[in-house]
Image (tube, rainbow, N blue to C red; front, side, top):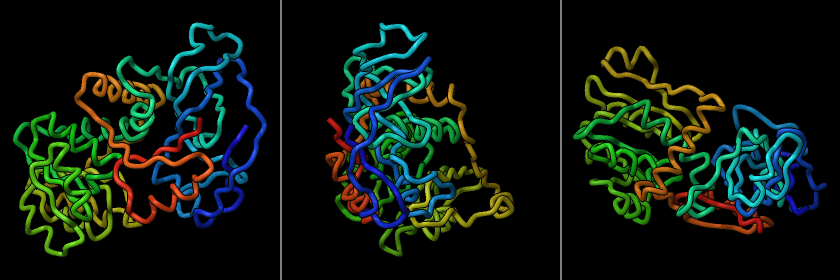
Length: 314
């Protein structure tokens, strides 16, 4: 099968197309004929060797795929054959034409939801759903979403709006700000302008997807009793905010925790149900053929992308 290999860490160019043996479904497993692979920011860090964890090399990267079940292993009912599904892979194997997954991790794609939308929601949808549940925005609360034009951020905007909150989107550049407005943000600020905090004012919740100085400035905007949820470090650094700093100001630092496999499945199903009902729309900003995975990583790192980036496998 066609695949993309990571044999050494480094720049995007270390992602090299090649061949790999076709995997075979074992007991309790299914073989997916992959049509689309999900790319996450963490995968760019794994490739660069800057992630907080690493993979054993050489490896086929990629943790999320969508496609059609082509074969099943022992103990698995044949009713799964031909079904449209999405699944996480346990950390690797996604940038390839075929993927073997445990049946327990498979989520069927609801009618009315495109496979591309389902793949875009696989990781980001469950993350955004988990964050919103943890922060629990209420009607009328003011919510600041950083990196609001990204894969997770664009979903946080929509879910917070659905909860009745007033959303202020922070992103870099007018193209991204306009996208956030189109998703329901009432206000949008460009955080490449150093005066951006003045344009936000006091908020009740901060969804921090950037970290670093941006997160530090956002923390200052929180009203007493506010909540801050950090889910990303696009700046390269986590939010420089301690529990003591938060307690002194009466702010709660919300830590959703790592969901179990069962919880991950339920979160993904919830996001897909919201999409099927027309209440959640993943933004797929760019697509690349499998062989151009290196270009996809470079685009993400350049901050030129909006929404989700997908690899088209077949």
